[in-house]
Length: 403
Ligand code: HEM
Image (cartoon, rainbow, N blue to C red; front, side, top):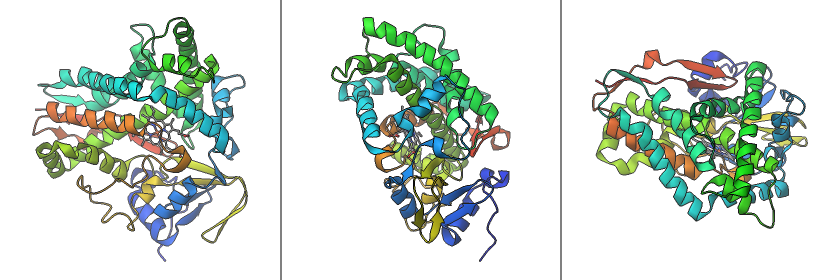
């Protein structure tokens, strides 16, 4: 058997997880990482079964790496909220409440908001020359602005930039294995966000508008929501939906620019755009562990491994998406392959609530990019600036030479 790594926390592995994932897939599908204090699960069928198994909880507070939030902070309330737990009834109730914000009427409104926002950031890029950082001017501002439009935040003009910064920071609280500095930064952002949402909820209670906060306040007469509920819901959406979609959009453009023949294929047939996004999520979204932790609620025997009560189990969607039993030649970036059954948005009771919105946003960004990117646009790969937080390594810039 080839030598297995001691830990996936090795920066070289975080930077290029593919070969290590392949080793684990073949030789150690239930891998014990002693340094991280976690099990790493990579095979497609195993990942899917854990997503559906309620002996594996989503409650982060059960993990040994859990850094408790400052007492009395909004982060503490969020962690105590049902959304972070995997247990059935309360979580189902929470999902049903969020669904009030995604009725067909609201979704139609959101789709047109997405198109408007993407055009707002895309149009100024037509005819641009020189080097443009597409993260700065395109893939980063769009998801945050979309959430801001959809939810109705920020209520006051001129605060969009601050809101975007907060939205970007909120996620730091939730990244597995993030260090204390990032966690505290995330907590402060959540507190600031909560104040903002609370103010808006007050206003929308008096005077409803066409936005998510109004739908949530007025759409549940039998199950009225308090301001605290609304703050927590909106914070969860921002935490789950901003940075993820920025990353998805950035990687989609990156992989296409790195694979010009695939970009040419897409230019010929734009109906492939959703598939191109799904393939980009499969190919390189997130980190080695795919960022989805679970905690064993009881001792569990899994593929012969003895998982103890309280153990952290990292469910690697990135690994599952490379499993040769479901995907041929995983190192080939191929926008024509069938990726519909893959697990980039999770599976089971916690399946991503924003998957449709995210797909629409990313496909819309991609189509807009096809309009503004000149045929000979060139990605300056060596100049991309990367940031690692916990297990996530992300491009914070995407410099592209336009002409
Ligand atoms: C590329 C974009 C995105 C990716 C790859 C993604 C991925 C995921 C994954 C893997 C999960 C499952 C987590 C688990 O099982 O522990 C999840 C859950 C979730 N996502 Fe997304 N997501 C994306 C965008 C969004 C957006 C735009 C929103 C909302 C506006 C959103 C809202 C949520 C929520 C609320 C949950 C928790 C659902 C639950 O616990 O029942 N996501 N997402």
